[in-house]
Image (cartoon, rainbow, N blue to C red; front, side, top):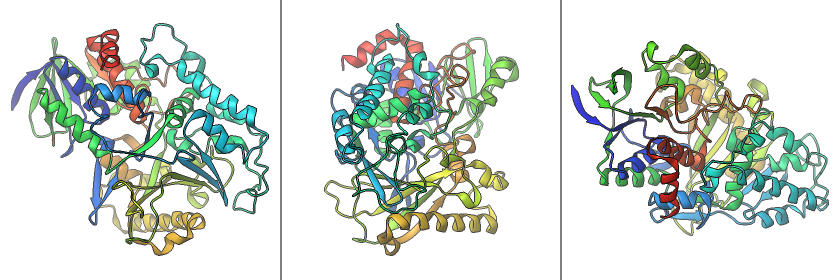
Amino acid sequence: MPMEKFDVLIIGSGLGGLICGNILSREGMRVAIVEKERQPGGNLRSFTRHGQKFETGVHYTGSLEPGQTLFRYWKYLGLTDALPLQKLDRSGFDRISFGDQEFPLAQGFGNFAEQLLPYFPDAAAELKRYTHKVAEVASAFPLYNLELPVNHQEHHYTNKSAFEFFQTFAHILSSNGRHVVSSASSSSCIPLSAVLAGNNFLYGGHPQTPLHVSSLISHSFISSACRIIGGSDQIAVSLANRFNSTGGTILVNREVTRIDRQGQQFSVITSNGETCHSSRIISDIHPSVALSLLPGGMVRPAYRKRIDSLDNTVSSFILHLSLKPGSFPYLNHNCYYHHSPDPWNECHLTGRQWPGMFLLTTACQHPGQEFAETMTILTYMQYGEVAAWRETRTGQRGAAYEDFKSERAEKLLQLVFHRFPELQGAISRTDISTPLTYRDYTGIPEGSLYGIRKNYLEPMITTILPGTKIADFYFTGQNTNLHGLLGVTIGAVATCGEIVGLKYLLEKIKGA
């Protein structure tokens, strides 16, 4: 059944797609977003289990205080006044634990160093060097600072290793006797390098991670860190409502199965037989999936081969816990626990060696919350661990898969109980997510946490630009620019800048 024509058609309604829709619709274009699920939002969506609400992929965010990067972008989008925020503990928004030792990562660059100094009393100069480097990297990326990229400095950091940078702090060990006690780690002294990289789950910490990925994400959270009270789905709801109010159209329950082109017009065919026509396409889905929808003659073989050959970031194993009322305190910080002082090897662990770490967060449901109602526990998991069931769908994977999930959940909980023994009697229900669950729910190949993995050894090859080799066909989302709320927001602005002019768009955003 043919449908009306649009100026721009966006495939996928994740954060990137919703932001692109809002920007271009406000510019007077007729824009439609095509979404395969029943609700828009992608990783912004929340879901309900046993009457409790859980986040899909966003658990906290950074740089949302007035004047900071994400605040400036989101002010233009009307989000800063729409979202209720809970600022995380200033003295330690992330708490990094190795065995029985815990170290705070604090908000504010001076405060960040000040809070770590009692644990590393000889490291004042090193902590200053770290925060200065993070700020230096951030200043080299113009769009991070809402500036036009005319004097490119990014290459100084995209081809540098985050791992090697952190290793320059490995000689500084925790030496305060109050904090050096027997632990499950292989050493009673924890190097500063391990603490600084202790939250590298935020970027899927890998030895090939570029320096700019770790630095930009760290800069954002050290600037400020908060949770969205009531859940990140409010971002999607607000953006969708604003998009609709400017004349935009969201078409849900329509999975795109094919994209054709005749002359200057694209034809997008959906699973229910409908066809949408548009002169421009923006893909907010994984680039390799998007290219697979195009006829072979539309894409150069070398370009398709390059995109298809790129590695994805690691996936995750997640426990969604419903807690007994009043049984466990609400934690206004995030807990990263590591079994050993090497946070860079954990993403590779499988089988008996797994898991090597976990990230534990408690959701903020209302201001002044005293007790946690839900908890999410995440750890790395290789897609290969569940590849035997890759051809199955949720709810139809059989007894062996259920046994696998239960065995791994118990193993992860035992590691969690080492750090939080009081949690053992607080759990009322447990729901389990594997890489296959995440793959099916988000549509991301292999259930990848952050899409295509950037590699400092091949920065040009692993960087996906918003403009493609196909005229009027664009990419947006976590595979371009950088993942996360801030990275995807900036990437969406870069994508729209390809259409309306980046200088023009940045001036409007800065003037909001």
